[in-house]
Image (cartoon, rainbow over all chains, first blue to last red; front, side, top):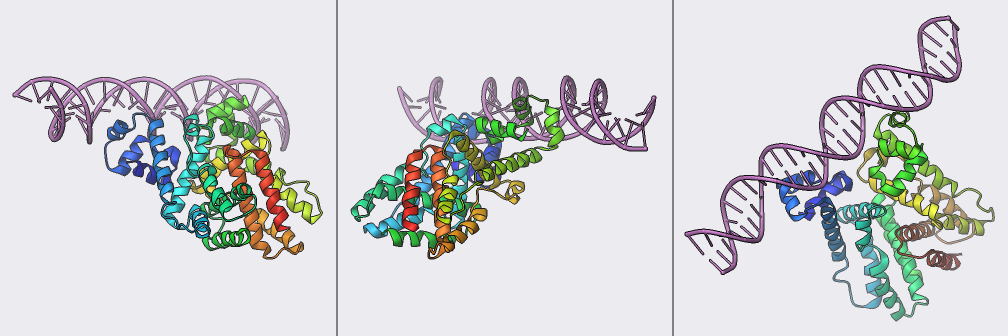
Length: 172
Length: 172
DNA sequence: GGTTTTATAGTACAGCGGTACGATGATCAG
DNA sequence: CTGATCATCGTACCGCTGTACTATAAAACC
């Protein structure tokens, strides 16, 4: 049912996702949605944890060799196909909503660097990169920016991947 | 009056900015808002052009010496004080809304790299940096990502500035 | 077997928000 | 002076949306 909310948010926007829209998208009754998510705030939170889960799935099954692991991890941040682009758009809508909604702001945000930065910093340290923490921040910020450009259509996928690879070649 | 909309969007979110809220914030009547912005779409577009103007102001008065110009230009992308942070949050809300609103998607977005990348690329070329276009994309993406981290509170201002300076020292 | 819980649906109410219609003073052209 | 346009306001309507109340079948539990 959370998947129906995400589909609805992708098409009509997150703020237009009411009980009726989600119910219609899921093919059930309005009250069934309200049965699982008693209030609208709960509905939005349910959608957010679903989005977080989908994003986390993108970072599963990475290679173990450190250099390849760093490369794959950062590549996974970039939305490459249409599904991941939609996912990131919905997540961006959540991030924007969290600026003014305290309940959403209290929720942890998966695409924030807080989860990835420690592990990336550890890998860079293992690889002997100087100032691993600062470099991890820079690399993640660059990928976040490239992801933003991709979701907004300011950049082609190939250009983003090329920019990331050039930066990685320079760092590693 | 557009300023009232931006103030309102900063506090209560862009989607909660109706005629009544903006009118109350501006201290005028509801119909006066509707007099200048006949429909809600016009109201939102008016706010967007105002935000774009405020963002463009941040890139005025840059130094002329190329190296310092690059540095100042990229520093101007980062929101440093509370006012610019609020501005970028509202702009992020507009960007998220543009994912589903065709009228907003048709409007040019100032914080997109389309305006800054050519001038930055030209400066880098002038400075003899190899692959100036790719480097410009990387630097702008990194600043956009750092700006996103700053607006979301994932990063301290000092850390963002330090990461940018380290990257600039490596590139130039 | 009866009772409680679960999963589903219909309907109704109250509030909010965009929009339309009409009215009033001010300013300006002829 | 008079008509017209501009700037401003109050009110009202209609639709949408969150939420509550109620009902029903199935399943589970004692």
